[in-house]
Amino acid sequence: MDDRTFSRRRFLIGTALPAAALGMGLSAPAAVEAQTAPALMGPEPVDVMLQVNGRAYPLKVEPRVTLLDALRERLGLTGSKKGCDQGQCGACTVLVDGRRVNACLTLAVATEGKQVTTVEGLARGGRLHPVQQAFIDNDAFQCGYCTPGQICSAVGLIAEGRAGSDAQIRESMSGNICRCGAYTNIVRAVNAAARA
Ligand code: FES
Ligand code: FES
Image (tube, rainbow, N blue to C red; front, side, top):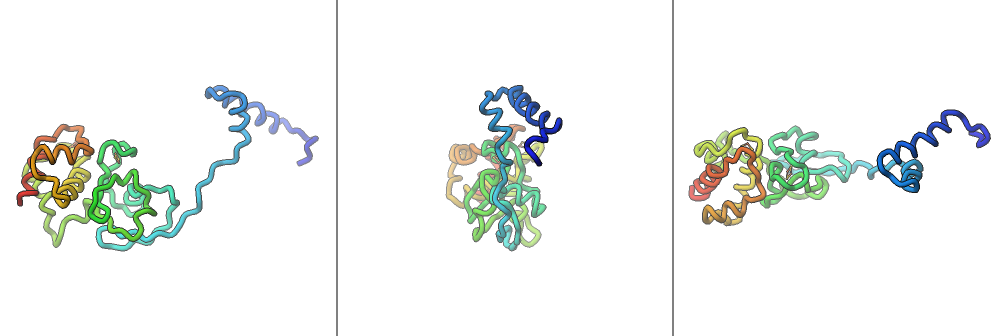
């Protein structure tokens, strides 16, 4: 377009955007920068092979995609829950090579070549995992939203040898929040599973 043909549309864009930015509390230079900055684009999707619950899943994901979103949105494994999405509640806890991680803070691409286990992968041959059974036997949930994360966390901490006492279980699972306050029975269930 010829610079001399300064259309009404261009004029409106040139004045409305800085005004809107100023309305959002940006300084004048910041407003101009906001107007002229190119749209932020992430890197292109990359091929990744996730190993989840003993099965290989070839995926194409942007490097910024979290393991939690890949599990839930791409693989349909919705057992792992999204609570806070910022590492505060533990609802998304899964096991990566047997260690507990917050899937919302873990990039999917970073788990390539590792074994991811979600709550869907704990049962064997139609039998619940002993921790799952202990949660049922001890009535260790109410709404159940935190339960998959609690169970994965419990499986991990028992394997780590950190279920020696109620106090140790409470300490080791302090990153798993239960809004229903089912803590007493959760500790009882983990204790029972650890002794079983
Ligand atoms: S959703 Fe990951 S810690 Fe809360
Ligand atoms: S059982 Fe409801 S949040 Fe834990």
